[in-house]
Image (cartoon, rainbow, N blue to C red; front, side):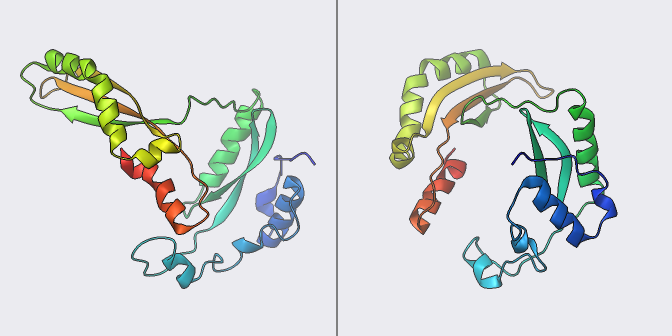
Length: 201
């Protein structure tokens, strides 16, 4: 069933009526929004197994931004926020974009950059050249730090460097381009591996 993101007048309904309209508009099972009930559906014990140093949980309102048309498909966008007008603003922007074909997405690959900033270099251009000359060695050194991440398709891909002029003088900016990998967490050890991509760089 195609999704209908044009749920006009959604704000004029009660939360229960909104839930029904969202479920119908998205073609979801009737109980799909049940986990979003009062209290957020998260116990203290569950939270304690998710992150470190848990001291409690906090419920945040979950709303649905309407009118989104993304890559030719209508989408309802759930948003958790305590800030008034955010959902309305997103819905309004989506309504305006919809009149021009909606949103288009693109993907440049699963690569992120770790930035190293070198200050007070006597010869910034020389430093930049030495970094680029050592590119292969630096990539290999970075990948030696986490061979498991490399085994799963992640790891360092490239090193780039440039000199930037600032108010306090020239700085050498080095980017280590890191290929990300996503591991489906089947057990706690896999979950640790999945988070390695974030902390590795």
